[in-house]
Image (cartoon, rainbow, N blue to C red; front, side):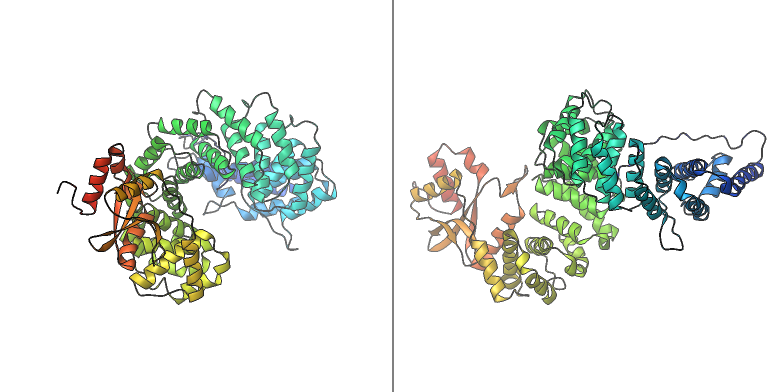
Length: 613
């Protein structure tokens, strides 16, 4: 997740001139002001110098955010030419000059001006480097540590945010600033934004300071009210705790209760909503009322045009991760995507997160999956998928039983290129997904793939071995392709058959009725393939497998089979050579209290004569 951008609203003017001055007059006047400023730096003290740099940095940032537009006023055009270069990056020659001027008097800088200097260069995301191999931020750190700088709250926020933004996490500096915060008797001197953004900076920089996080959490939990916290302050704060993996149940509880008690979430921007639920899901903090409140807010909106692809994917990921299935929310999001004219703004990670969320939540939406699949195939951008995104996406399609042959075939070359980069889970998911989809891929599943599996063998989890066993069956029994080494095969097989069966009341009832109609069902039979069958009976001299398909086997209004069901229904007959028939739970529930109808249903299913014939 990326850092939330501040929500600035800058009004532009359509006036194309200022007073009676021509464009060239304005250009020359502003150029003279800049030249005089540059030439006068030798006489500047630390305050004048930092205020000049900060002012120019703020203007440059605003100009970059606004971009170019037709009919813009002359002053903006001239300022952009002076402060920025063609690619809208800061004028490095000028800002490098000011950085050098700062170094001449860096020893004179106090805490406030050190933090303002760092903040200014972070605004334009520029780290000036010097001939000695040390950059501006290194020099600021050394001076701050040398003088044992005691920063005021705003200074701590400025410094932490600046260093995190430019990716310069100086551990010694962060440790010292964190210790200062912990030493404060009271944190009332921090504005809510400063508190939340300071925590964000520590998490973003990857600097661990548990005492700091505990101190801030205690302050927030004990506050009389959180009304002073804006939506972005709240989202940044919980994001920081989740990202830093610092558990604090009371803080999350206080924040959730505050949000739930709000009359409306209209002041929450889509990004704030997305980050907040993402943080709660990541921190494994379950608060059903919070998730319900956010879902109702989203569902109640006329349209979701304000939501960016990343925000949509993070929200859906969060709801799936938190196991909070809100059917109206899932339908609203899916409809928005399906009805979109284009999915060009979605990146591979967003696609992967979205289909994973629907799969993990058990929400089948064929139109959504088809729309995403068509876009991916047509866009010819498959090489943009990283190993995890690719593996998760294909696993999600296969899990939901939506085995789009064109999608799986299109991904084969890319999936093959990434063999060396998959995690253990990724390897197992890719193998299982293609087995479930029954899409042959010899350039993917070859000796190199086998070697990778063997190489990673000790790192596979139980579920991964089971997936690889099903893949091995598909490769060797259905496709006559590559096979795992014998010892690896045996390990996969032993783990596959070791799962303890869970017998439902529905299954017990079906087995009982099979006995009543004169059959001798054998329960929980392990076939040669390793599959465990609910019941095995002999009908007219041949064996038949009976599968009682409950809620975990089928999904959706159309009761479509899931990937695990599709694979079993295909592999048992093709490998074990035995017919497999299904007893769907919804058919059985209709006649659950009528033994005669249940027995007649089984006779019809197995083509047996009834008692009356």
